[in-house]
Image 1 (cartoon, helix red, strand yellow):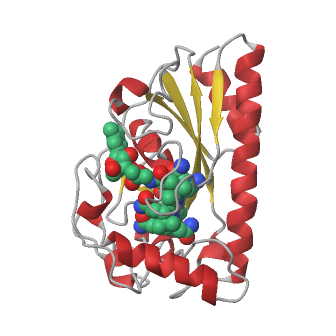
Image 2 (cartoon, protein in one colour):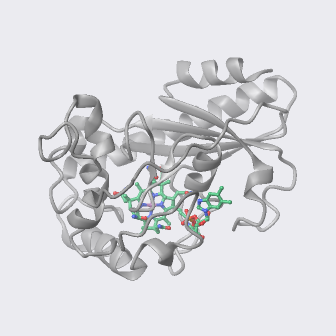
Image 3 (cartoon, helix red, strand yellow):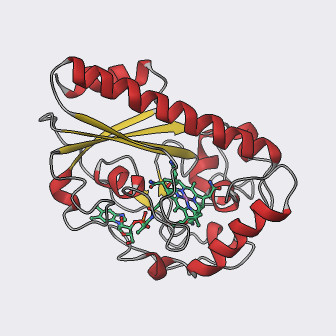
Length: 243
Ligand code: B12
């Protein structure tokens, strides 16, 4: 089974972006359990584009519509990852679908593995100042899922950071959590890019205080990134070249 087949299958299932990461690039990365990657060579990173109609109305807080979209996109991502895994297993290879958004620890805030790290290694996008993966096609308006496999797929190449001097996410963050620090490849830890506690406090508060919001979500930095607005031919302030 080759890259063309597996990517074509994932796209037919509803994926907008698909890339293959060489797990050798991710050596030493935090996983749960620590030997999670032991039996695997590659990770397939799958992205679904969020609907602009849902993201655009987000101002300084998540909307009820975004909450619902978040749940539906997570469900579709899990579904695609499951089907890709079935497809790989039918071809006598090993596959492990990692859930899109299952939290394993609410104090240190981590999951099985970082979908962002996988997506960066798979060339889906770069790590933006917001810590989010920013894709050239849809900016950070994507959600991600991962399938680990022992298939010898051809790895895709990471792409270079294109944030430059832009500070749109930093300026938009309602709790000034983004430090506006750039990186070439990826941040060494979350604190390098974020005042992490500010972000966590805000998303936790959203889930407790806002009507119809039940998950720790926000969406403001997703909405603010000009790379997401780009497809529609304008940056956030209406200037095509504002990014
Ligand atoms: C826990 C979690 C949170 C926590 C903590 C956030 C955080 N920054 O870690 C809270 C609740 C605060 C949160 C908030 C948000 N989250 Co969240 N979250 C997760 C979750 C479930 C686990 C992340 C995790 O385990 N982090 C642990 C740390 C250690 O990992 P990390 O920071 O991702 O990466 C580390 C290493 O991997 C390494 N690294 C990073 N890149 C690379 C690349 C290479 C090659 C290497 C070697 C290493 C490396 O350096 C980092 C620091 O140690 C993921 C889903 C998933 N399984 O990935 C979604 C996820 C990261 N969240 C997502 C989103 C969208 C959000 C929010 C916008 C909320 C919302 N939906 O409105 C905010 C944005 C906050 C922000 N600016 O970072 C998306 C990101 C999509 C994207 N385009 O990048 C994800 C991937 C969910 C998904 N299925 O799409 N989230």
